Image (cartoon, rainbow, N blue to C red; front, top):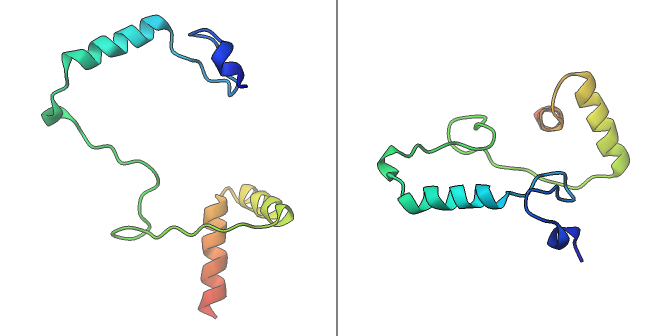
Length: 96
């Protein structure tokens, strides 16, 4: 059984995040009960922006631990993400 069920509000969870206190829950409930004017709501984009116009397809695959560690080390040494490294590798492979 998870430790989360035995911890009180405002205490730290197993992941290190903090659970809301009863006062925070009450404040959020009061705010929600007053209602929101959705005409004033703004849409927030989440995630990375598209690489081109429109939607960029997502590619996901599994790899060995050793290949992952090598890719992570190379990306870090170049100040890049693993995704950027993988995109470049695929572009080079498919260009020739």
